[in-house]
Amino acid sequence: MKKILFSFALVTTMSVANAQTVIFNETFDNPTGWTNTDTDGDGFTWEQITGITQPVNGFTDNFMASASYDDNMGDDLTPNNLLASPSITLPATGPLNLRFTIGAADPQWAAEHYAVYILPAATAFTASATPVKEATLVNGATSAATVQTVAIPNSLYGQAVKVYFRHFNCTGQYYLLLDDVKVLQGVLATNEIDAKNSTIAVYPNPTTDRLNINTKDRVKSVTVYDMSGRKVATKLEGTSVDVRNLENGAYTIAIETNKETQTTKFIKK
Ligand SMILES: [Ca+2]
Ligand SMILES: [Ca+2]
Image (cartoon, rainbow, N blue to C red):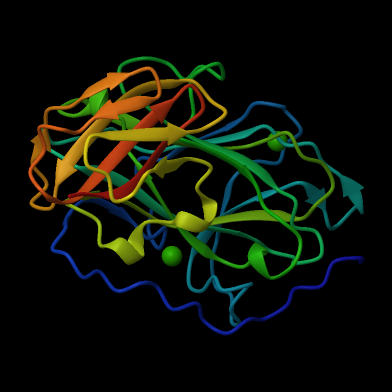
């Protein structure tokens, strides 16, 4: 066996400073209504891991895992495994965020690739849909369980949706691990916004008149919320937002690009 499971100390989850309403919460201790598709047809797909006695790279209790390596046969796998949530009815008012814990089972074989999609429940999954998050985990310490928070596109508010976790575009690593999938309603605390993983920057910050968005991707829409979670009217002009009409204070901006939706904060002064 080339793979060794390392035990890591429990990863402490971030405390939630702001009041947030939990719309959906799946611990995978006793999951119901999730569906599994082995799109590549190799017989390996997402499975529930139960009964572990030691934490696996920060994961404890029951969680989900998808293999890119067959430990019994010593064979590399190239997964295309899709895990779909039950239908979740989103409230009409936001901001809404999806939060999940993700990581790799083996820190030395951690380059697992995944994408997360949130799509209307009534329509079938299509791989050409725009993910809200797509990433490759990195070998080393960052393969341990990390909490990711992504903004749910405003266009889905008030709809029934499904959340999809797709493990694909990688070969011969070990296991992608997933736990604690949540849909949250309410403004995020600053420490909950994952700046480290952000590929979108806004400047100047603080700003008085315009907020510019720096991204390689095409900006499709922006939604700005004040600190009470109320949506405020703004106009996107190219990659710049006119904020002259906003009152002074802190705001959250959800930026939807052709790749994903990211949330960050800015100050109007
Ligand atoms: Ca769990
Ligand atoms: Ca498979």
